[in-house]
Image (cartoon, rainbow, N blue to C red; front, side, top):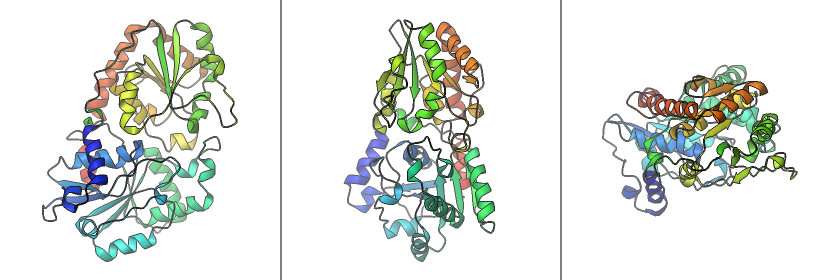
Length: 389
């Protein structure tokens, strides 16, 4: 995280233009990509910060991030003040915006007035049109804001998305409501980068006599965790003295203060800032991680497989729902285990609890796969080079 922290302080503390934006070279012969105001969270990092840092390592592209906002879960991007220096506008070939729920017409006109050749890109990281009622953000996404987001997407030159299912969903909406839009939809997967793991300690190992099973999520997605509550209760009964259940990011409580997992006595670990996330994940020393997911469009046509990749970096074997996007990345039985029914979940978890060697083999295979196929390499950076031409 060293470079990410340095970039954040550079953009928040430096006042002189040249020191804030050292990549600003108007006549370098490169394609210029301007990322607008990401937040210092997972979405901001994977969709803008890491790509910008990686593009700046190429000979063909240069990227600048206008500024980075400290993450506030109560705010949307539209709530932040994001002023743009005119020099950045004239420098850019592409401007990349996060999903916006307010009208962007004025912004686009203002930017075009400064740079007629500018291409506009809006990036989607989740399916805001399919937020389920069980999700804590359901009431925040109004019908009007969904309509405005779609109208904004139709005005773009390119829409990028974090999963193929997400783009398929929005392609259908655009064809239905904006058939004359000529926007291109491009899949840019979330990829892991060495920038996230700078100065992170070597892989930590569980030194206790209990198998540590982790579930990573939040109160917003508790409904996914609760989809396997029967399996968790079965495992607790069967292995009460052999396993520990760790909830990372959720305290186990629902809005009505119900505690559906209370009888399981889970260890709850508070969410941390993104800059501390990878260290904390390593410190948990998980032996197994569970990634349950309900079969709803918000998941299958919205989520990416980044949680699996983050766990794979630490060689933690994963059991995930046999649904997109996880079954698009996991080779069942090799780089992870997939499950659909309660019986399959119980069988897969039992296997990993009882077979230490199987855990090691799957963890190592996942670790190799993530850096080989799902990290920034000479071949995967071409995805960006082909989108920003």
